[in-house]
Length: 178
Image 1: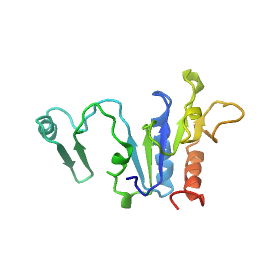
Image 2: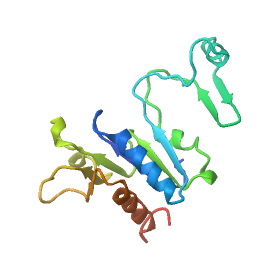
Image 3: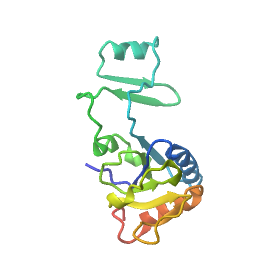
């Protein structure tokens, strides 16, 4: 089940600048008073804790779920039941507390069906994704794209313009979030 919040993805090959853009975009949205959730699809194993710490050792011993809690934050680590399988976007989105957010930005999950902005840099020498993905609603790029047949172009280095695009998309009368 998809959360009833605006969800926008940012997709591109590694090294395109997705995280750099998202850091700036989250700051702009926060300055505008929005509460932003962030979901990143990692293509490798990761740990929130470090070897030698109690919670790491307990998880390594076989705990299925480990909750780390402090005065500042908490994080729940859950071991996937099936190893080697990509996580499901909807299942991950369902983990957020929607009453504490205004929108969710996703980095990755490029094969999932949801509104995405492609980060495109011609210098990387790879073909753009948008011709093969109808869910790409805009392309953030410093480069020119073919004269027609592409979604709206956004200036990659202008997080304010990208924030405006996202918020205008949410406010459109035909938006699923109205």
